[in-house]
Image 1 (cartoon, helix red, strand yellow):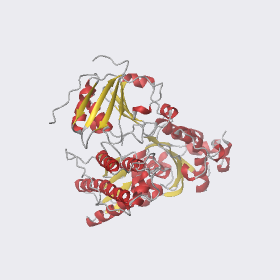
Image 2 (tube, chains in turn purple, red; image 1 turned 180 degrees about the vertical axis):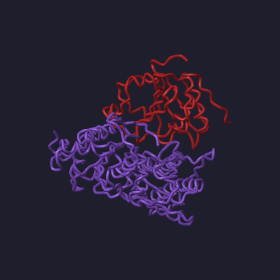
Image 3 (cartoon, chains in turn red, blue; image 1 turned 135 degrees about the vertical axis):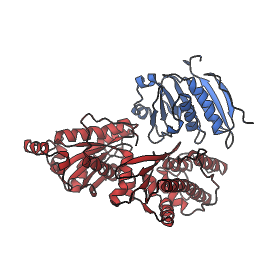
Image 4 (cartoon, rainbow over the protein chains, first blue to last red; image 1 turned 180 degrees about the horizontal axis):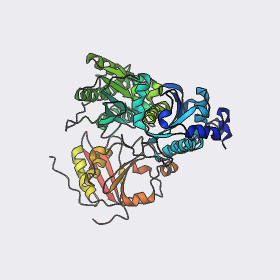
Length: 374
Length: 156
């Protein structure tokens, strides 16, 4: 058996533990119990220990630790292979950092979808194996619900109803949160996600990957009014997003000004002012579209708070503009810190805790669903 | 002049589109002629309108075009209906083994219509496309749509 787990106690439950666990019904899980979260839906492998549904004891993301040292520091080419090699050390690190053993873990929560099926399967299989070996309740979580819950990890008492904008490389969706744990989708993107548009523009300019942080940095030194971008409106008045038009406008400008880089990373180290102006103008247009839709949604549902989550929630201009616009309307704007904005397992543990407390657990036949909707 | 361009079933040819709406309508009519097992490869640079084209295909297959969104990050989307449209994007796929990782199994391909953005990145041993559509940017809104038929393309 995987001896690497032994510092945290043997993985298999002893007879005594099994007896005790069988006598613990779901609603008897104490409010101070620890839940293990596992997230493998995209590029990063993550595991977290959450105590009492809100206290983050650990939140480990594979890119932060040298899990690849045993394999000569080589990052595997395939995402699923990367997860397979990382998941053991990442779970081990999550337990160690939280100073807990397997005996302290009361439930396992895992991302069921959406995502790449091979990547999701690694997390789901590991979670099922742990749940089986430890006789623990298992919870399957929607990745997007995880992002929404990241705001509640920072501020558990967010006023409802609220609107929640999940904005990342893979998703740009708006939800109404009428009551705790009830989500209604109000809008989604009809083409690119906002983070994807940032990345593609950065790639054309040769600014490297991921594109969001570098565009954010360069935009701070540019003029947001220098390059005109169209205002994105849906002809049917829908709240849905569209970013491919902004991306195409940026691509045409880059071509016209001959700013195209030969490869995604060979752009100039100190880009000229015109690149800074383009970044500022493009970012301004993306942020304006996100804010316009979110505020309109907040009006429509009578929201008292606005939540923003996902990797693009790290964007400084987005945070600043949302805070300003929300406060002029007497609304509260909530953002998670960067470590909880990008993909992480603490948010999956938080969402799992909510389901666990409602008695919504999965059987061991839980499967990954790459197209899971919220 | 923005008269609709008529695609002649699954036939090869060059077409001029004057707007994204016209491109989508062109793809919609093409979508009506697609059957499970068909593979459509889309080629064209960033911002040429590949996802817009897929919206049209979805509509033609009787699916909700608003469920279509870019699979660049997530790599594969499936829009389910009477015929399922599998929408793959190879923008972030750099090798043949990464392509295999997408898990696009043969049985799924046989029961679904399959559309692949950045089709130029497909492994050389992939099944031949039914249709290949190259989208060229000719102006802010105008596009040239070059439709070519694969060796196994049926006459419809």
